[in-house]
Amino acid sequence: MNEPIFHFYGNKAGVEGADQIKQTIDDATRGSEYYKRQQEKRQQVLSKVSKMQVELENYHKNEQKKKETKEIIQNKVKEFQINTDRIWAHFDMDMFYVACELLDKPELKDKPVAVGQSIISTANYVARKYGVRSAMPGFVAKKLCPDIIFVPCHFEKYKSVSNIFMTILKKYDDNLESMGLDEANLDLTEYINNSQVDPATLCENIRKDIFIATQLTASCGVGPNKMIAKLASEINKPNGLHVVEQSPTAVLGFLEKLPVRKIPGIGNITEQILSGLNFNTCKDVRDRADELYIIFTPKTFEYIFYSCWGVARNCHVEFEDQLSISCQRTFSSISTQKEFEDKVDYIAEKLAEDMQQEEKVGNHLTLIIKTCKFEIRNKSLQLNQYTNQAKQIAIYGKQLLKIMQLDEPIRLLGLKMGSLANEKQMQKQSISTYFKKQFDKSNSLENQIASNLGSKSHQISEDGDSINKVQLQQPEQSKPEIISEDEASNISNQLLSGVNSKGHQYQAQQQSFQQKQQAQPKSFLCPICNNEIDCKGNNTVLNKHIDRCITTQNVIVEQSDESNKNEIVQKKKISSKIESKAQKSFNFFKK
Image (cartoon, rainbow, N blue to C red; front, top):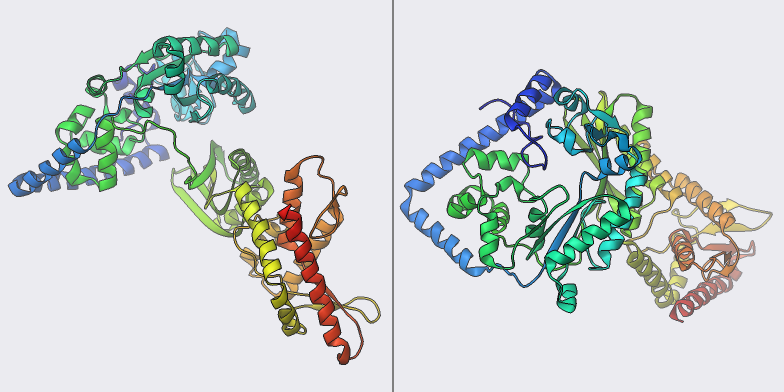
């Protein structure tokens, strides 16, 4: 019972001979850091299960508690109903990465093949018969199947084929929910109601279209909600179809003997806990739901309980509440600072691509690493502005790397951006907020300028014979703002050095401002900086330019070297200029 449980088998299509596979994995990994880590996890699970068993024993001795709990469960069952008025389909490309590779290497079709080497991304069904599967270390795969052939990952190739796959599916549900490059959920209700086609016939035709377009096979599941369709797609893999009829009886019958681990979201640790308490199938959960209610948190209980009753989401929802986007990669162990930084650059690029595709910006970055001892470490940083640019993410990622002070090899590195916001909405909000503030407060700025002249917070530098340039403090901007690359570099350098002097800030800001002024193209007149911008018919270029102007615009006041008696006249001129610019900008965006 104290032996580690390796979960590379049991819930993946094509895997056979679980006991023999487990023994081979045990022999291959015994004494390794991975094995030790699995032992630690197993001990933690056993400890948790032991405490839960004591809790259940006390529960069964308390008749009053049992009666009250069973009433709660009965009421919960009465409250919900299994909705079967929608028709969902889940399409899943078979062994997708490997299948794409075999298109170019047909001679490997009948041989055991896996994409990836240090960690398996996907294995074909020949390799799966030996127990090889995704997320398995390459050396373990080699022990299970000595003849396995490792093929490098070609992500762009997979992405190209995925675009064809998704294009076909969108003809039937433009709002489909993609779960990666190789699988998607579709609500086919409207299409079927309009066409009066049988769901099974429709999905078979879609699978044929996918094969004709890509020369790859896809499995499909049909059911009354997203979860049931997903579970059904696993039944006849590969290249198969399974339909769960639109009735509560059919749904409950389908789930009756289904292993709890099959439920999406239930992972290895939760499975071990449930198994240790003899919750093996969905029927076990339904029959002993009162015990589940006692030992788990309300949130965990409700998810497992409702899932085993077949209750799940059956309509599309907006995912504006997405909390984070992350990207991580596993690789052969690396140990030098240069290798670490190269990985940060690569992951930052991929994360930026994902964020830009989702039109998201974020300002909370987390660096995640896994050591060769399989220990997970992470460091986070709250940025003062929003970004989705690779260079900026990499700058901050490397600073987190330095803070983490790695002193041992690592085998996984990831970056996660949190506190997400919609990029277009943030740009629009930033622009409109700035102009409204400038327009409404133009009169009060005159007093602010007067009080700030000569203030310690402003830097005055000699320029010419008798002309001083006074850089005024930028009016407070309402968050969120999208950070520029220069600002990212300046801010990140201050994280470790602690540099925060006004002189350094002025130099960095002035240099950033001058660089941007010189780099601006000329074609369209910007209402803020009065420079022309080459938009090339793309409003995004103009929007981003204006957003940068808002973020970095500095009001430069030329003060004549005349006597103090002319100071009031000069202040009025300054105020007039600011008010004129605010009015002009406000009118421009009002059109």
